[in-house]
Picture 1 (cartoon, rainbow over the protein chains, first blue to last red):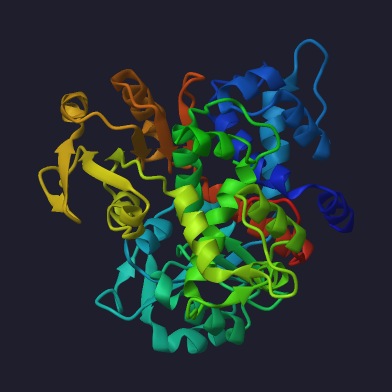
Picture 2: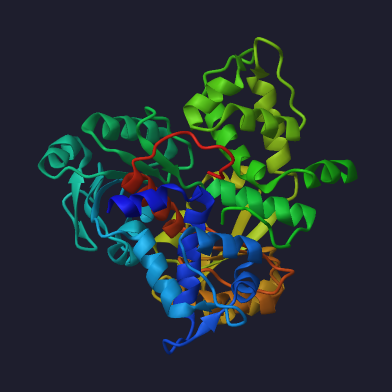
Length: 222
Length: 222
């Protein structure tokens, strides 16, 4: 384990964000266990620069064979092992609107060792069980957290409430906040924050449309 | 207009993705019209490196004043003008599950000049009007597109259908695809693709948790 963590710590964050993309794509390939794929082949499909792909794979210690490329089955195995380490992480979701429900139903989380153990809201969803997850009133957040502490808090409330929910999560002892509201939240330095901003994606599309850009980019997170 | 497009074209894509984040944050500040804010102040709140913020603002030609920083009202005005240029963009959404509904209800799109004119599905949502948007059967996609061509196609279907929907959009003449399914889609080079991957965000959080990382990063897209 120690050794693994040392390897991981030397990897750039943009590489981390591209690994799930490679994994999803590789899993769509019809592979009999003996297939190979080259970096240019992957790059062409995913609109990512070849040299970046080679660098990403080297970072997680996967080497290609000359002339044939990378063993597809090996790539899938190594990326999976790297990304979804064998530690189950628990999460709580606050905000059971359409977006919250969509996350509760995201089947892939299971294979990624993420276990959403409860949801919270203040409206008619309270008391229901949605996608096998019990929904509680927000007032019970600290109580439920004490019973089963989690590492990750997921925020899917309207933006005006996002910071208050983040504060509640930090007070309770949560270490990482995954924020889906369209406003950035702030937290103490020791808290991990990941903002998933729909607005950033839209900004990128509008910018490209307005400037007629559709080329492959180097060094960008997808 | 010509001049504006020239300015835009010189800007890096990661800068584009951070601008909505600055904008959201600046709009939360209680500002009487005369307030100033420094790059370090913004950086501390958003966990972004100061020098990166200064660079981003310089790229869109905003200069700070020595010792006081940036005029908040000016920042908001210039970023808005830069991001949401005065061209309305139309979009169609395919997949009216929880995620699709959540996008139909995303109030901010209006201020960002994005107009979702119709939704498509194959199930019980067909025929309904959700958040003022009419939902049609997927079979009618090309017909509706012909009546009102749009630039942007939004995909919120389960991953196994995502590529087929992308192909349909490209065939119809759509220029940009915003893909929310958790699998990357492929399209001809002239098509703009923006993949919003939940898995990338999760990969980042798990990586940081597993390696106990919560510091401020340079040069990363948020």
